[in-house]
Image (tube, rainbow, N blue to C red; front, side):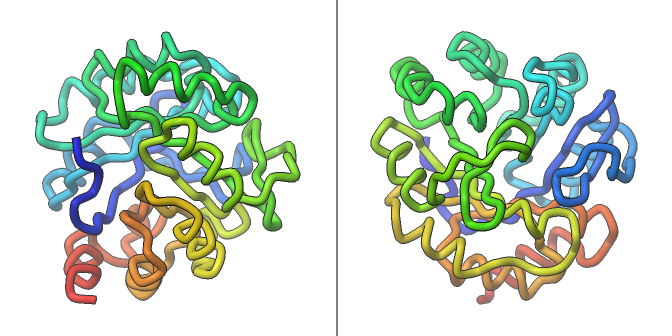
Length: 246
């Protein structure tokens, strides 16, 4: 399955306690609620989304898949041609395979991939190219466990390491700017893009359409947008059209 043949703007559907939530700077308790996940998914598909980015926020913090039922209802409601990627609380190769068999196209591994890199290779064996390794950077280093622990790893170096292990794509999030509508860090994205041949999906800090265009110009294959879309800073169609014209 080819990932992102053209640049894509991917809406985020982050789920906490069964509701859609957007956090600020990755801090728990900072979220604004945006209602039912299935309704959100249907809204973005109606606006032309080709892929949805699902996150089990409770899973990301607690380490197990607290919102499995809510996520499954989204998977069931989404037409087959829409790509689905899910992150948050996936800690084992068995978890990942179950989700891929359920109908997800890609699983996003963060903490698990950093702590047990062999999981990436194990999933890739049965579901080639389906693992997205999520690298979250804060102050220029990769952080794990709900953005609370530093690893000392350089994001570009880490990306290259996971590509060698079989990652089909890299999700690169700059936590410093996430949810703040304060703009992106283009040079950080460029350094990760230059380090790997697999697609890099950028996330965090998109406040306006110019940020989307800048990420495309930085070499990202796609961008995940949350807060800006939910707050109506621009529409999904506007962002995609601007990126396509860039």
